[in-house]
Length: 131
Image 1 (cartoon, rainbow, N blue to C red):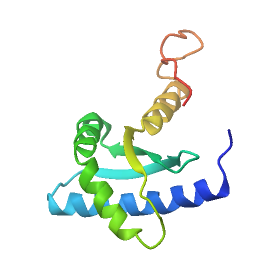
Image 2 (image 1 turned 90 degrees about the horizontal axis):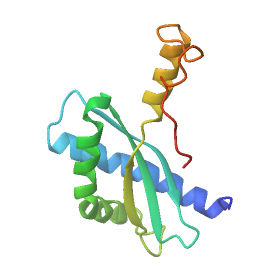
Image 3 (image 1 turned 120 degrees about the vertical axis):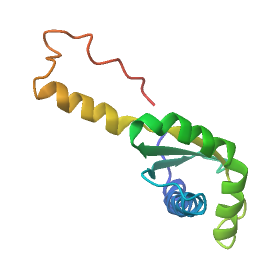
Image 4 (image 1 turned 90 degrees about the vertical axis):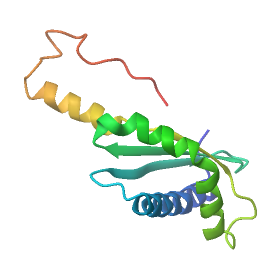
């Protein structure tokens, strides 16, 4: 099913505010040498749930950082709700997921440059699930 204009608008607002809250949390905890960004937010048709996809650089720390963010979901939801209280009637439940699409594209780019030719060895690139 295709997203409605309302879902897209709410997703855009949430993406910006979640990103701002995460940046504030990073500053509070004095985390350095780590880049966290919200790449995409999708909202269910009933506006009850929002999935936020998080990209982390360097990618080696991605799983640990996303796990920490999931543990702080309640605090993040509270702070985002405070920012959007005049725009939403009800704040959607937040769910956070690791977005590894940049690493996957980088791996494909490396393979196309000739380091490991996927045509000669098709098992090099792992199969991806559709989301």
